[in-house]
Image (cartoon, rainbow, N blue to C red):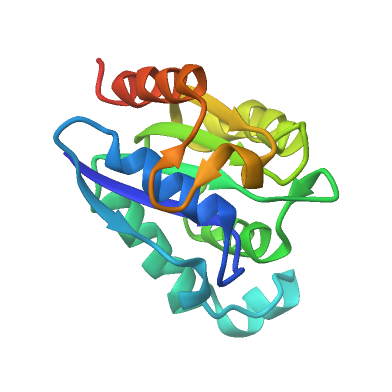
Length: 175
């Protein structure tokens, strides 16, 4: 199974990218491609920009990456209770080229944050909308208090949370 993993953040030290990549490494038998959102350069979406120049090639490249994989592991950064601006912009552009952005792919949806809620607000928003945009949402997982709950060398430090994530990863491959 080819799995595309990314954190929906452009931070060079993204905790969500770390969580997505760690989770993808737990998917049984997966060949993982790690995507970095910093690779996508897009103007801010507007109808005027789209009319003048069409959908940018980077938005189409993002869609092609999704379509060339069997499953997705996405970890959402939460900025003021919502998507990070760069991810939202990419998502908006991609949806202009293809309404079903997630292409019916099985998805493990994650979030984490330094705080105790673990990105709960953005995770809830995505759970409500991603299926309408073509995600086959298999499981979700939120990791609160990232600095205290995740070791860069070993991953999730709490055995119960780690087991919960392992189960979520197994659901990604179930039919």
